[in-house]
Image (tube, rainbow, N blue to C red; front, side, top):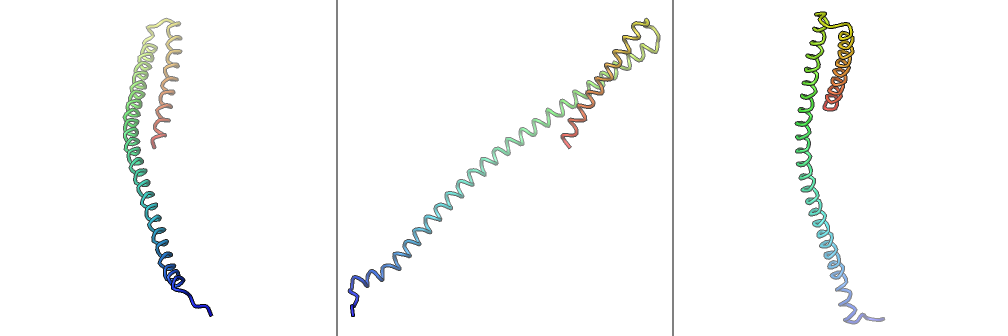
Length: 130
């Protein structure tokens, strides 16, 4: 029967310690990887937050621009309606010649078409904001 020598016994005793050291090192490596991943995610979230702030500013600017354009379109409609009323009044007074009346009617049709076009554009703008 072969009896283990003292060197073999030491190796047997050291193996569990070596395995535990390996596990400990592996766990430390995993912890470090998780920490690096969390730092990377934190940087990503900070970047996303800054982009979100930028997008909020863009959204605010767009809302101001949209309100300005909508107001301009309303003013155009109002001006064209005033012009249309003026042409109607001229036609009603019969102070124009036959040719002037025909020209006025053509212009009135153009004005009404333009009013319709502007209103359609304004309605489309409104539908995108709902």
